[in-house]
Length: 83
Image (cartoon, rainbow, N blue to C red; front, side):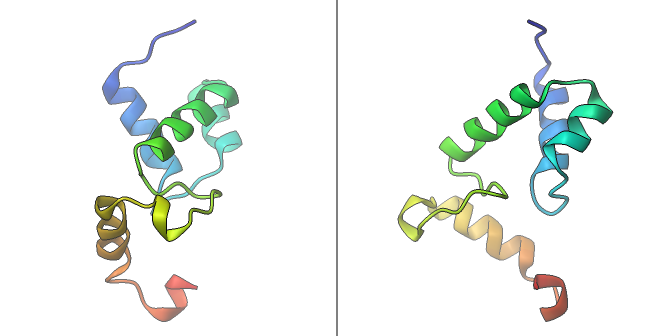
């Protein structure tokens, strides 16, 4: 099983997480990394409280840092962009 550097993993996750929210399939194909690996990385992010698209959390599951990150990330977006 290949090992990926912290920098490469962060760069790939950046494509999967907000604001880009690209699909796992497209990023896996582009990067040459298996879907299963990317889903595992997203699961690890979710367990750390990072907002992950495609997974609905209740208010109790979001960390304060994750809530603040979402507010900051979306603060400059218009109503149409938020929709």
